Amino acid sequence: MADANHDLTELLRQPGPWTTVLTDGRGERPQQEEVAKIRAVTDPLGDAGAPEADVQAVGEALTAGDGLPSPSTRYLLVRDGDVVIDEAFTGQRLGAEVLAHGAAPRILPLLRHRASAVRYLVVETAREGARLSVREAHRGDDGATQEIEGRTDSLNKVQAGGWSHRRYQNHSEDIWQHNQAEVADAVDRLVRERRPRFVVVAGDVRARQLLLERLAPPSRELALEVDAHTKAEGSADEALERAIDDAVGGAIGADIADARRRAAENDGAAGARGIGEVIDALQQARVDTLVLDARLADEGEDGEALAALDAEPWVARSEREELPAGSLGYLPAAEALARAALLSGARVLVVEEDLAEGEARDDRPAAEPVAALRWADGG
Image (cartoon, rainbow, N blue to C red; front, side, top):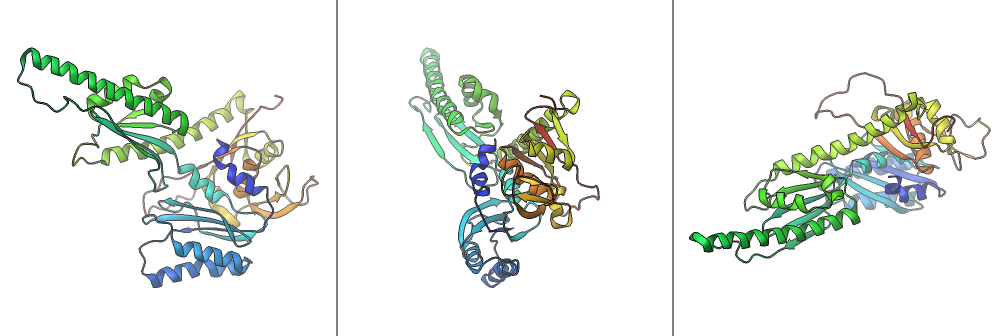
């Protein structure tokens, strides 16, 4: 799964300095308020040491907008006046606003939002064909959409009954099965090529049944049937969208639960817990998946800081340690751990809190980081 962030890993290996921005996307504010909002981002960047070229690049990118409905979130990574990453996500921002400049970029905010951008396939099927849409949650873009137009002869004819009517029904069923076999072939191909986390199957009841029977096992294992006929004229899609939201949350939760389970194997020998143990495992490149609590990520500059290194082992407790790498300065603990995990080929997951709008967090401390290891102690 680390390949999803291959571009970011490659950038981390390159020298800075970097300017990082995580902020709210362009909303429906009047033009004057929007200009003030952009100034509220660019002015602090200059105070943080960002060069004028970076500040100007950020201002131009924010002025252009992200094309997403409000609320949305924008992440920008800039070096030498060049915007090297510009990504937007639908929904509320995860964590505090980030306006930073330094030798190491702040990549954890992007990892948090990318983790929620789960890819999935929606199949809206009917007897005459189907609409297939590859989507990514929180991207505001339905991605590739394909229409399957099957045979329609005899499907809508009205018959009086008798032997001719039974023959018509059999013929219609043959056409229906042929159409769903064609849809199944297209679904199987998209599953192989685009690797969705799940496949939502909605539409006509009989069409769904025929389609599910014809899917290849890898596609059928991913299938989530939803009782919603979205291709019908005037139909609503609330049930479909609700099922998708639940499936996205379930996919992320399953990944976190799997990492924790693996870390607990062999009486805990397959995992590392706490900042100290996780640093040791990262320095040995043993971490397969790192799980961080959102509260640790949100501590930012107020929490513990770790040294970010310019080469392996990528992270240290302090700059005073004797290690074969130079220091890029200190980063917040969660940021430094995530950076080292990405650079050593590990996956990073963040446990976000599901709070209702306006609901305040309780005062529990952040959970300690947990890592599932590539091999156990003594392995």
